[in-house]
Amino acid sequence: MELAKRDDVPVELTWDLSLIYPTEEAMLADAQKMKELSLSMEASYKGNLTDAATITHCLDDYQEVYRLITLTANYCDLAVSVDYYNSANQTRNDRINSLISEIFSRLTFIESELSEQSEDVLNEAMQQSDTNRYYLAEILRNKAHRLSPETERAISALSQTFSAPYQIYNMAKLADMKFDSFTVNGKEYPLGYSLFEDNYEYEKDTDIRRSAFSAFSAKIRQYENVTAAAYNAQLQTEKTMATLRGFDSVIDSLLFPQQVSRELYNRQIDLITTRLAPHMRKYARLLKKIHNLDHMTFADLKIAVDPEYDPSVTIEESKQYIEKGLAILGDDYVSMIQEAYKKRWVDFAQNQGKSTGGFCASPYGKGSFILLSWNNRMADVFTLAHELGHAGHFRLCNGAQAILDTEVSSYFVEAPSTMNELLMAHYLLKTNPDKRFRRWVLSCMISNTYYHNFVTHLMEAAYQREVYKLIDAGDSVQAETLSSIMKETLQKFWGDDVEISDDAALTWMRQPHYYMGLYSYTYSAGLTVATQVCKRIETEGQTAVDDWKKVLTAGSTKTPEELAKMAGVDISTDAPLLDTIETIGSIIDEICELTEELGC
Ligand SMILES: [Zn+2]
Image (cartoon, rainbow, N blue to C red; front, side):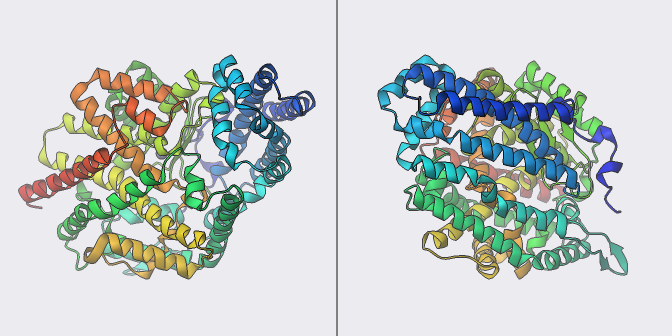
């Protein structure tokens, strides 16, 4: 089965970008508008940001420019993400991005001049406008790390170049890597990046699954040096920027915008790698036993506990599941779900050159755009519920907050999404008392939700922390270094229960997260909050739901710790994380017990 070309995909499986702009001309008109506005702002405000009233006017204009930038950038970038082979879209995206760099560079005077104002003037400006208050508070917090206006302007003008490593990574992965088919017992199987990650990793036939992994690894290994070079360029840039801005460590500089302490970051990685590992090894042993494997390898970790049971789910059926599963969040939430299907917020299609995995973009005031590849599996229902969690979050916060107050810390951003996965699972558990069904849902919670966020991404985070230690010590990294750090990280976690081969060590090549700062660890942080709030919803009902919605509405007007506290979770201690790890352990224990009872 060869993947379709983008042009051959049925339109109902694609998202509708005309919800952002009806035509390309309309987008270009906004591009022109934002350019002109930035020029007039430069003319009126540059050198004049010395009193509260002028600051307020300037920031009100800035909100408008920022809104237009968000819309034009999303419109162009989303079109590229579904078809990396379309060079016209690439060119258009590059053009918009360089215009945006130009505008941001022109407007760097705002932050520079604001940073030079006295606290009194900034406080007065904060009093004048609710919608500028948190932005100004951030200026104050950032003051010590700001460079001279000329330097800030030069850095900003280079912003597109700073994203080159990520672009190179994506080009190698999504456009250049062409996979040959592989053969098992005389039969030929097609291979591709998403075909491997969405299908073969879950394949129940061990020969096919392991052969696919070897063929996949052999292909990506051909690109290990270019990938390592791109990544090293990213790391060295981050280190240089950290040093310039007065941070001793890249880690501190990347945690600063998240408003998260080093302690919280380290705790997440340390506790999961030590306390969760025994539970996950038990899960690996269970998979080995159920599937009669001679030995357990990295390529076997994603097989389902009960693959025969996995019901196939159509897109239409997914709507029923999700509406019912998330109904607990209220009628307004359900009507958003209906709107998402009806107005084509979701790109379900599988086609050549499409970005892998899933994401949700919510340009201010324009609904949401969800990318995924639909495979008719229950796992896809969970992915969609997850992405709709982001959509639901930003619908509330974009609706209630000014655009500058919607930059939610990445520490919290995966809480609403993983929360929806848990709500879906809890809903399914209530629909059917059958033991095999129960075991299947529980194992979905492990293999999808917790494995993905607490293991896959956390392993990336643990690996990433080791990489930054080298970078902080003044070293650089090559493919060999990265493979050996990844191998050691995985071996430490899985111990003797899972064989970690040289192919498994190449896992560092697979995630785009390394180009997004410290993002990987935040998945488990968000899911920790979600697990605790989900428990509250189970026991307290409506009050907990109401608290949760207030949290979603708060946007970035609160720090992650404050948001968690509003939801009734105190993340200043390790209790929520330890309790979540125990919850995962007890789910695995129950899967083992049910397996004993079912006798298979
Ligand atoms: Zn997410």
